[in-house]
Length: 161
Image (cartoon, rainbow, N blue to C red; front, side, top):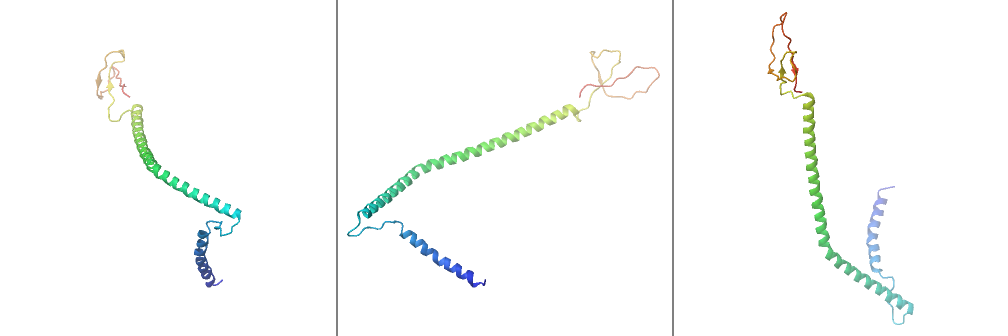
């Protein structure tokens, strides 16, 4: 196929489109007006066609008026819906962010409780083994004492975990 064939077909198609558009707009009414001596059925068909066309025009005008009346209300309702939806989305996002932050804090607190906080030193309690654990405890810092052959036992109890 050579290059001239598509060009010719495209040109013919472009020239035929306006011709089709003119024929469809001119023949909008299928029943033509009647002359001096018309057939009775042709008169009825023409009158019925005119009635239908007039009714359609009136319905179209009434519809346009009705749409013009309700359009501002519909636009207002649509804008209110969009505003409400965006506000709701923002509130949900804020709630989710706060919940995530609180959850993170609770997780961190739970980790600190289970593992112990590395920033706080655990107190070391020193008391003889013969004393009751209900007795008042003394908190001291650990000290290295030289081991002697006879002496008292030293206990290091960690009470704060």
